[in-house]
Every structure is written in C-alpha cells, then in structure tokens.
Image (cartoon, rainbow, N blue to C red; front, top):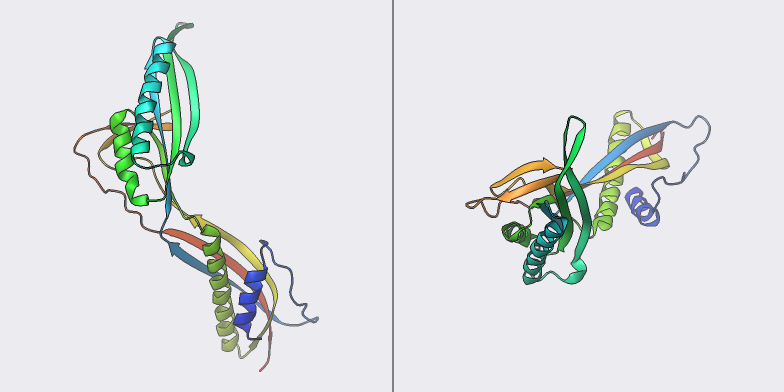
Length: 249
C-alpha cells in the first residue's frame, strides 16, 4: 500500500489522541522524527449571542418588575426575528442587594436584578441587526457574541489527515538530503488540535461599554455603524508527530 494511502486509512480508523505503535523497529534501526501542522479555515455557520437585562431600584419588587418588562420586550424582538424557542435559553438570573459602607456602617441602597439569555442563530448575518434591536428595547448587557462551526469535528479530521501528509512530505525530503529512504512509521502521536474562533464583546456599532460584575454594560447611541461585524473564518488546527524508520537506498 502506498504511504499516503496508508495514512488516510489510519486517520479514518483512529479516534484517540495518541495512536498505538504500528511497527517495532529492530534494535539499532535508525529513525527520523518529524512534526506536521495544518490549518483548515472554515466560515462560521452558527452564532451564539449572550445578552442581558439589568435593572436597579430601592424597592426589590419594582426592580423585578422593570426587569421582567424589559425582558418581555427583548423576547418579543427575538420572536419577530424568527428565532425558535429551542434556540433561546435563559442563562442566568441574579438578584442581589447593593450597599454603601461608611464608618463601619452598611446602608442598603436597593436591589439589582439581572437576567441573562443566550440566542443561537444559524443565519449569522442577522446577528448585528438583532443585537442592535435588543439594545434599543431595553437589553443593556452584552456578555459575548461567539461564532461557531457546526461540523467542527469533520474539519478537525480533515486538518489531522493533511497534517499527517505534511509530516510524510517533510520526512521524505529530510531523508533524501541524507541519502536515505523513508520506511514505515514507527510511532504516530497527535500533538493536539485547536479551534480559533471569533468572539466579540460589543466592541462595535457606536456603543458605550464599561465593565460591571464581570459582564459588559452597554448603552446604545444613535448613529452607530451598521454591518460592522466581519464574519471572516474560524481556524481549525491539527498537529501530529511521526517517527519513521529510515534505511539506505
């Protein structure tokens, strides 16, 4: 079987992060160790936007009521955008008192009510418009906008296979310089794979941003730029290390 075809078969059969030794070289058998890398760039086909509503009032019931009203308006906007119920998830509900401390005296100022929700969109080009409308109706927190690839495992397999081919080509060229032939692979290890995604934290579209309790408080200003999120691509990377036996021609 040709070496590259052998690699392809091995890639399809292997699912672990460390592949078992395929051949045992004889004692004193010379070897060459190489690594292979490959990156597959994929356009995102899903985006998860996590936003929230935060309200404050001296009366806890009024703070909750204002929060519920703003959340209701936000959910109406989400429904109008055609997002189905299964793609909407309430991520966090937090109610906490706010205090002012002075001379060892703690005075309660009121109550903060915070509700976070996550929206999954398969039409990624709609996220800018949807987030804009949500901010206009009362959502005032943007925790993150995360672009994803649905079939990431498939592209990781593709990147791994191409990384193996890159390792084979490298070993063949290195051995040729030394006047040697490449033999069977003695050991194959996956060095790791990664997905470099695209995440945004409301750094677009003319919004004032300040941090608060680990999230981002965002207030909308009119006149912001539209279509300011460039989707780009997501880099899916694979790395392998291969030890080949070598011999004289």
